[in-house]
Image (tube, rainbow, N blue to C red; front, side, top):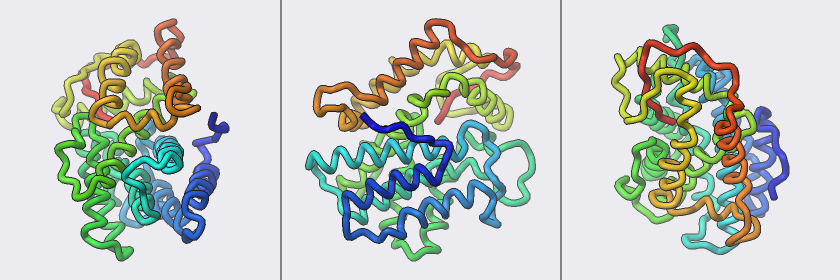
Length: 296
């Protein structure tokens, strides 16, 4: 089982990912993880003059840390089991960069003072890919590396099918699937996931208002309570099938012991689902006037 980790502490998460990175690649440049985390966290916290600090309350720094920690653990387990394709240090780096930047599309540009970054829900994947391209180009990454990272980020869209994204190599697609897997597992397994669902609803409502209700997914909500009550359906009818099909069952590398032991992330998610079914809801927002559509 994994030891408990405070995903609200980016420094602690970076340290944990550093341990994974250096254990897999003993000759690795130990400066890479602190630099990579530093660039993204600095942007989220207002240290990038091109952007305002993140003000989306659900898709915040901790959301990214939850995914980063889950992805590092998944890739470590997969690597130690010798699964093909075996990742090189450089490939691991690109996958981690994609994870760290996958929700930078919620950042508002300097001078954009209207609303929060949640208004960009419908286009945040494209905006995240643009952030990654600009950030990585400025740091000397090649066009091929940047395109690979952008393709990985595209996998996180709820309607995205990695089989239709033009990855150049099998390892790129695997990392895209790992990223999308960890994005879902990391947030839904969090102890406070259910408590944060009203905040997620607020993001959807703002995005719906900003786009005139034109969000590109089929799930609609009239209120935070409806979103919470439909979350078990989301897990059973969307997330689990997606994990098993489009995302190539990579989550199974987290089973402990491999291959048929319990999966701590799935167990935590199912505990959250039971909590919802038992009626243990957080304080709910009043029903909203806007119907919203969900997108991670």
